[in-house]
Image 1 (cartoon, rainbow, N blue to C red):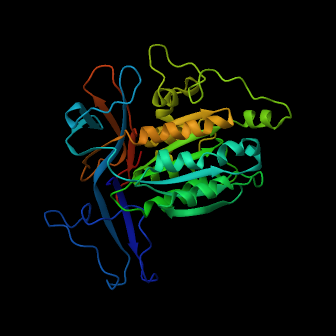
Image 2: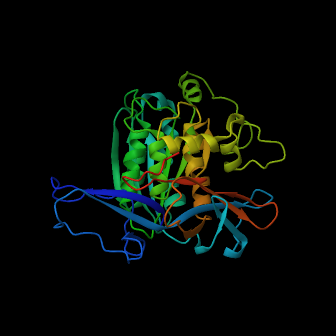
Image 3: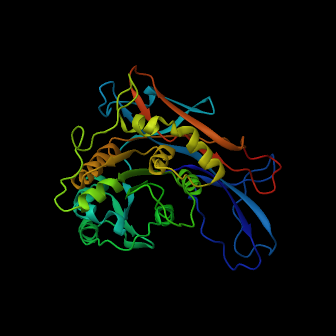
Length: 387
């Protein structure tokens, strides 16, 4: 899969080799921009003159994961490219690539293992088989990261479902730290090295709490957009964990069937992952997400996980019972395998800053979820201001 990014690489005499790029650099999508009116030149070899020379590389397509639900709230499976309209900063785009659930998945499962959620660990341990069967699927590759005060890669990328199931089933509660953003950052690094022809997905099962990570949420979301990673989150409840820890406590009463939303939605709007995520607590997360990506800062809010999903076109599901964790992951898998992929030509020379993306379906009553935009940085040394 392709996506859009602008990367500036500094070729320094003191470095024997360039560091790995954060963005994919397949031959089909990356060029080094030459002088105006001249063809693009190939990237310089390691033996280039030893001087500080900024090189601007651009990936030429924006790739979007798109989930569509019909007026009844069911996943829509029967749409073609003619049913979609894609706008970049209000400008209608030509759809260059269209697919529906076709590309195999590379998925990292990031799981909190702090002592804070120890009472919910039984539900997490039993979710490994659901993750491998429903999310990874037959052609998927998966990896597992557990985190408390320290993120740990429990399983690197593998196509072996039993290896992942075994690691998840043996998760143990650790200390009371929760470096959520550092764990997400490690997952994004792993996903950035996956082949272009694989859809990149990050599934986070955690509380919306971070304790002392060096990574910032806004910077992570910018990286996720650059790497075309969709973030799906399963939010664990601290309150539920405390209640389940009490002897004889049967847990809070659940409103509605497991896996459904427990909070009222906006009148007249179906309760879908997108509408609930974007209106959680009557807060419109889209402006918050845009500012996070612009500034690269943290969001100190119970909506941090929801913001990560909204920013990348994923979904957020809140759970209050250990048994609901499996059902939430199964629902994520169902969405991923009914997901459309749309791609269009990126702007060649800006405008720089935040680009808003809007995807519409021409059929009435259909609801669309995708990532709301991306941040296009100006080249190094440019006098163009960054919003």
